[in-house]
Image (cartoon, rainbow, N blue to C red):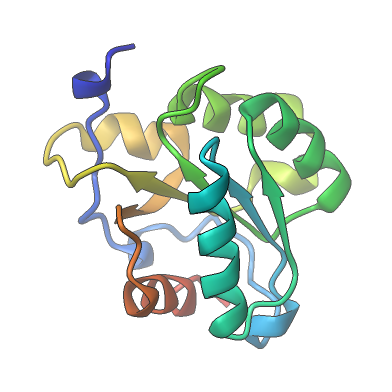
Length: 151
């Protein structure tokens, strides 16, 4: 799938998804899996989350590692880059939904995209994304998105 074909529905409201599980109370208790092949970006996002009070994170630098980590780490939310070297974020989202145990299937997925692209809401919704952040990820936008997760 080419980069320009990755249409991201960044304006989709979190309130429109009522099938995701309640997140643990308080930011420190929310288990977050970060998936990004760019180690600097992934580590920067992890540091930003720590600064915001989210201390329970795990970072995977490939889609393959993310699949293993999701099963072992049991995240409450997954933040993943749509452009990974070994598969797209959409493909990874599908694998997370299809191949992991039931408790992982309903985990909220937040996408990270190079830029906001209006367009194919069906593709992102069908892949299971409940929100989208654009690069560079701004701390206040990240905080707002995480606070709006269903409780």
